[in-house]
Image 1: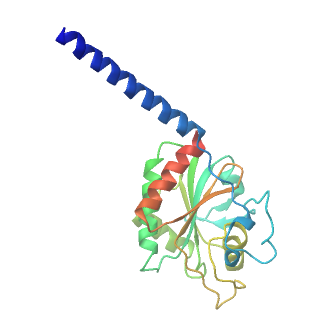
Image 2: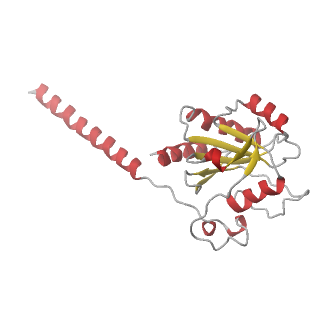
Image 3: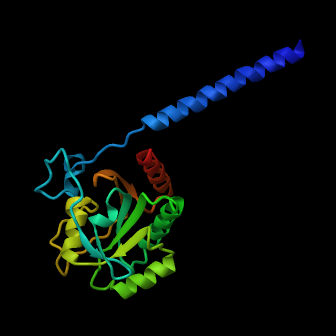
Length: 217
């Protein structure tokens, strides 16, 4: 009799655990990330010409040079989910933390060719290809997963302000213009913004990893 009651309890427990797992899987499959357009951001983050745009925002085409001297464009990220950040190699404050967290994302998806990373230098005149090559090697950047780039300063700053909405400060990309942001921006396979995260925050890194899995599914 006692054995029968014990078996019944285990059976009920098994059913409860199974139901919980199935429900959790269903919720994960139904999870949908928002698609961000200019009007969804704080006004100070958005160029005045884009403030009222509510649909169909995608990241603009770009032309950059990576740590190996190769030209990097949207074609390199076609049908990819990727994370973008803005950094500079001489930064001693937030950038080392951001780079270490980008490495965490890189390692999490090391075997998934659909996930990539893109870092853009905000001091491109200083961060030459050779400087980026040394930086990438020292930080553990895997070339096939992560492009660490330099290029035309005005072009990079326009991308930060008009495509990725990564910075509050307005400017013209000129000599005295300087941006410094901890933001990581998550881009989907359709070149749409799906999330913005604090790249120096451990909890935010956990969220972005989970959100990448959600996009994959």
